[in-house]
Structure formats: structure tokens, C-alpha cells
Length: 240
Image (cartoon, rainbow, N blue to C red; front, top):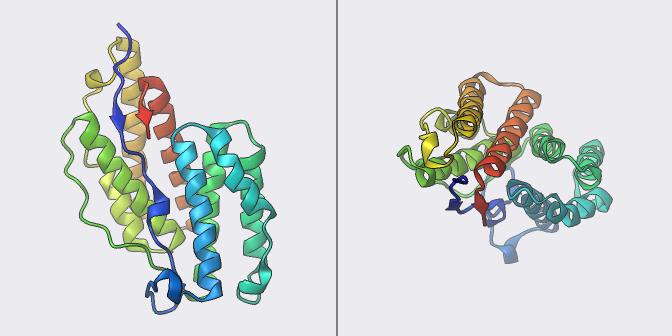
């Protein structure tokens, strides 16, 4: 018997409106400054990369990665922040050029970390959309994935913000659920592999709150997303 196929809604970071402002307010599109519009577009392109990679379709990430890697609009970024822009283009180029999904996830996590470093250096905070409490962990595929989606969004907010509380909440959420592997795979060998991947996710969640260094957070986040992608391929998950 083949592995069960199951469906869940993937995280869509592009649905989160982003504004960069010292006061943390989020003006409407009409009320944005050119700089806020510039930042929002970058955020949306990064979201496109992220969503494509979660689906496991690297080719769909390349258009947005290519745009970021070649887009140079330094007139709209704070003075002295050009190296952050260069780093963003560097990591986007890695996504554009690589054929390895895990390497693409790592580079995407580094893009999120670079956003946060730039915000920190300029004394501003990205203001993400408000989020409800995490969904309860029910031990079933749908509930587990909803919890992981919520955690990924909060951890991303923690990287990009930068926002310590968001990072800690997202990390801790990864330790709350435990999927029954026989619900998603049937063979004993596959069950062990899925169990190992879930243990990796749990371990990342356990280490996350103590990770104060942005580079370490980016490494954990990239590992988390890559582990998710490995599990999706193994279980035949259909991600939309």
C-alpha cells in the first residue's frame, strides 16, 4: 500500500502586509511612503520564494529570486545600509542559481535574517499582521500542519522584525504537537523516517528560545523549513 496523501494549506507570507516604521504603525497602501512601498515589495518577493520552496518547486522561486538579485534601488534605503541590500541580492542569487532545495531554504532564511539586521541597525521594526493564538495540537495531520504553519509565520516575524517574542512563540509551538506517523505513512521504514524528521522539528523548537544570535536563528529556521520539505516529499503531501 502506498503512502497516504493528504492536503493542507501552505503558509502564505505574502498575505501579511508589511510596513517599516519607527512607530510600528502599518499605513494603508495609499498612505505608504516610497520607502515603505519599497520594503513591502521586497517582503512580497521573499514571500513568493518562501511559498514556492515549501511546495518543493524550486523553479517557481526563481523569478522572485532573480528580481531581488538584480534589483538595485539604493536611493530608498537608509544611508549606510547598502551592504544589507548587497547581502539580500547575494542570498537571492544563491536561490536563483542553486539546484538544491535545502541550500535554497538556507539562503532564504539568511534573507530574513538580513532584513532583521538592517531593521535593527536602523532602529526600526517591521510590523507584522497581528496573529491569533496558535491552533491546538490535535495529533492529526491537519492540526499538526496548522500548528507548524503558525510556528513558521511567527519565527519568520522574529527574524524579519526583529522580534524576540515572535521568535520564541514560534519556536515553542514546535514542541507542542506530535503527529501519529501511521496516519501519514504506512510502511515501518517510512514511519521511522517521518518520526526522525518530527524529532528534528521538536529539537529545533526546543533550541529556538535560547538562540539569541540572529545567525543561529536563521540557521535553525532554514533547517526547520528544509525538514518540513523532506517530510512533505516522503509522505506525498500536496501543498497548495
